[in-house]
Image (cartoon, rainbow, N blue to C red; front, side, top):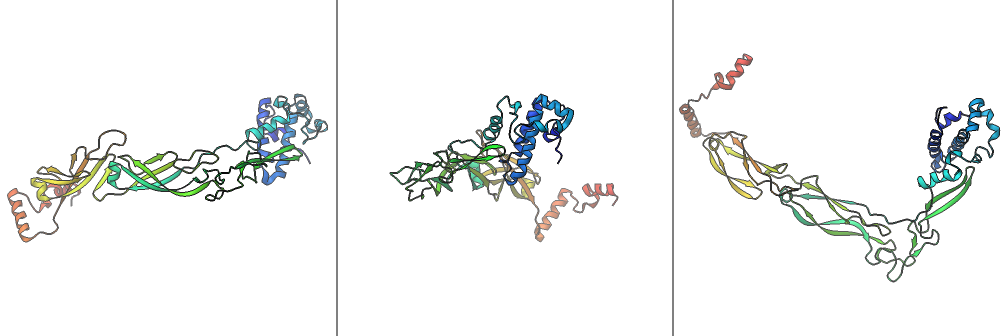
Length: 381
């Protein structure tokens, strides 16, 4: 079976420098290392051998020159320990040889090496809090109930019954990890796995706590006081430190994040920190003016409507909006008036309106005047 071109195996041009060869080899070795390809270890091992052989030849200046001149025939008889024997010493790694490649995989990539399991921070939790419009405007102090995992109060999170202590796992010696050493055609491989006896905890409980059954953790529904500042709106998020899930092996708890959802109001809408309110008025009020009582977040206030007010006019009431979230003061309230036209008139009301039209000089049949006349002029209808 003919061999692939060594440069093609490493994916480099024939002009590749020593550094380029080294980088290419590291990349391909990582890709095809058997410990990275456990689902297809046999095929990966063959490709890894091929990559190793290519680099062993091309990283040696003399052998590379021979290969460039005569191809595989010039190097097949001089492989030393063979393709899988690492006989050439991996000159490109500065003399470190096989130790360098194992350092690359096991220390940098995390596939091996024994390290003691340390403290781990607990997970963060989320709580969705629904608030009224007024509560969001003025702030709220309340208690919420959050289901979470906590350290067992009986054993203080150790998992051992009071008066006893967990023991260091004799199998992993407290590291929480075990090593399996196997010999392969590539050399001595070390595979690090979670210790089965202590399940990665590094300790064994012989007298389990009766409350948590040796787990060191219990599930509780904790009541937590939260203070929601004035001025929040839907989408705001409040972080409560250390009120999330409990950590493991002495790690800190996670955080609790309270997400705010503000219910719609029957009268008010919000634009930034301003409040909008629509108030209906009659034709008479709009025409001759009036003084109204309008609702605000603080209660009713008096608002003067001048005569001749048109429907849709906005009136501002200063400092009656929502509290600014990050500064002092409040927004404003804007009252939009809506002139309501009566749908049914009594005979007397109709007579009075007709009389008003005559006194005012208005034409109650305006097809030939004003807006409708302009429409007729433009469209010819």
